[in-house]
Image (cartoon, rainbow, N blue to C red; front, side, top):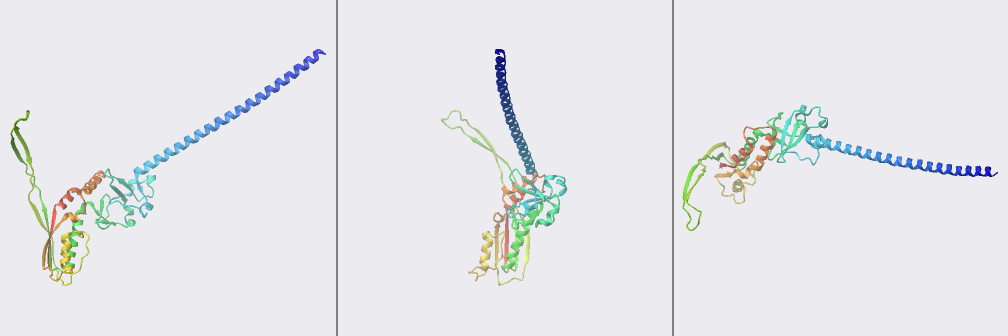
Length: 329
């Protein structure tokens, strides 16, 4: 009997122990599963972040490449807020052929070190662009915007001569509108020749100042001399006693030309002038400033486009020029 009771007691204890062990094992399994889940979730989050980072890096790389290539598309060009650069180079479309980021572009944009923008326009898009190129659109040629017509671009090699023609045409129109019978336009340009003359001067020692002895000071001076004169045009008209105010662009702010117009068309024009000669300072009708001319030269040099004469030298030559306009009524 006692033995049977002992066996039963041992059996109960074993059952309790087994139950406790089973519960502990179940809890451990659950805890392990939860930990594994947390680790799995953390790994997934890290993978997502890594994937997102790689995507951002790829997009940044693509954007940097696109910025370097600078493609210009139709929707960019025809946008209301598109600011057309004042230098255009006509290019062959084959230069960017096969470049995926430039597919469908009408050209590309470059920016010089002086922040001068240049539009490289495909020849195939010229007719659609709404722009006029003087004398003709030619691949590999650089063009500069006309001073008074933003839709007209003039080849850089012909720019200054073309602007000079425009000025002459305007002055002929002034003479005609004011009823002149004769007019002549001459150009005076100062020519500079350097002549260096050595200068020597004796310097005496200052009394009472130690360490300052006498000696000689050498130097040189540069002198300019001479001028050239050329006739730009000479015209004869039938003449008119009904003067009209001419439209002005180049000489709109020139005091001499405006004074001439007032003498013929103003309220006190009863004592009409019969002959006059006005001297026009070219600075009032300059095509550009020296600073802008230098920027254009730098931009063209960066594109390996070299003209016969630099814009800066042509600009300086223009500023040295005076126009002598003689009109007979």
